[in-house]
Image 1: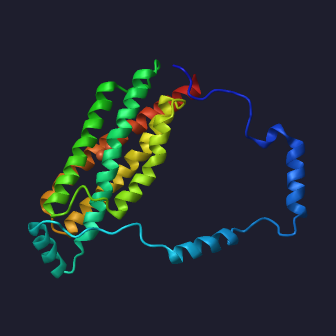
Image 2: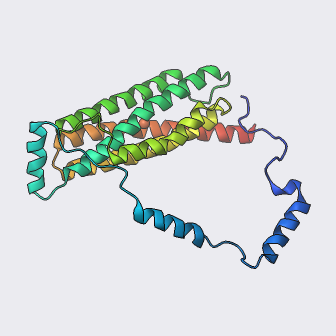
Length: 241
Ligand SMILES: [Fe+2]
Ligand SMILES: [Fe+2]
């Protein structure tokens, strides 16, 4: 197996230049302002936070059936837009999940040395399950009268969060093992995302929805177990090599 971690020249650490390190430390000591405590950046952040508009809003249900349903829940003191926002978040992240698996399938194909236990069949199955989850969430939104094509605030944020993961997978230099680590982050988020959706749909007495989401969570638990094991076996294997 080709190693993911190789020995090379130290291009980033201070050990290569003890003289510069010494002068840098002297500069810090002689600087009367001392080490910054972060108060400056905190003040700037606070100003911006005070002036900022929200990331977005949740559109009201677009269909009569949905409006009646959400309206009825409103009377019981529930805010269905909370569930709609979190469904939007899951929708965005599951869509990214499909893209992540597509990207890792390509990397898997292009890498001669595979990771122990990893197979194209399993990767393809997990990708298809992410696509099914996407459809499941879209259907759930429609059943509430919400528009699955509208980007909710949490969907917007989920898109930003997953940008880094996509960048890791699409970087031609990253190894299969490094890509699997990005996948692990996605699967950890997937698992807690579904747990929260189950709780919210139960709170909203959406029993069928909760049952469907439990099924999705079972898939995600399986994804997580495998992704974690691919990574662990590969890294530990390299350590012993
Ligand atoms: Fe998923
Ligand atoms: Fe997943």
